[in-house]
Length: 348
Image 1 (cartoon, rainbow, N blue to C red):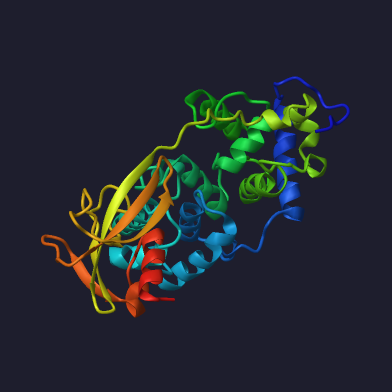
Image 2 (tube, rainbow, N blue to C red):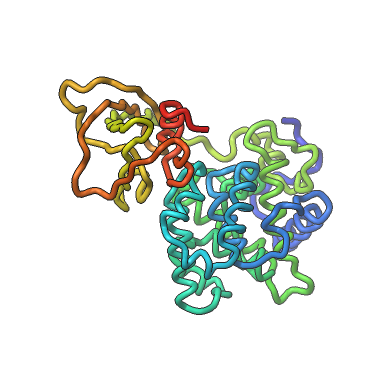
């Protein structure tokens, strides 16, 4: 990456520099940022909550159709709070990281019980499933109020902008990142603070300009402030995480059929795929069983290599249902199990 001329190489930024950075982000977002995302239209705190939880570890293009279907099914936080868990999980299936769906349902029920959507950082942080980032996003996007945010895009942007060393998600680096976020985020007492444009500008810069690979530094409005660029060290930030060997775990599932129907059981509320419908999962392969198929799935911390065995016995003490191909879509299923069953049953 070429060094831009006349960029100071010091790692400290004055208050004037920070104010200039904030103003630059706001101006750039107004002219070049994203403005047509569905959750940016007729903004409400509930829409922001839904979109932010969906966007965790998921790209915008993937989230958009899920968000639109969700808002049709649950247009208000009260509607979501009253929804059965099975319906919530069914609408979420395919997005992965199902704890987000359960957290969203818990949050909605908490808010419905309290009677009003929280409107301060302190109150938002009491909502189940709402962490520091989501609380800041709701304050910024929904209320146009002071709400610092640090997510993956912002983390990368700040690490390069201020040449912050450290492995992402470690306490020391996170402390530095949030300190920068608190200093840079406009205060509502300032004249014409555009907290929404500032927060969206950070996310847009990270997504479209300060990308993980091949960042467009020549197009970045913050190039003159960027310490990593000044030091010709863009590729070093954020510091790389130490590589870990991903363990492989074997899993066993039962395919119990009656003609074109298959037996599904509802999983418990803990462990992998909690509260989803799934093929029965014994601890070990049944003796003398015939192998019906296999599938694999990559979780965050390990890879699952699953074997599916033909079985002819029904299970006891489990919530279960016989399901045919036409009705698979009515059940919240883990994505790899759904894909496997579609191939077996010939479902669309």
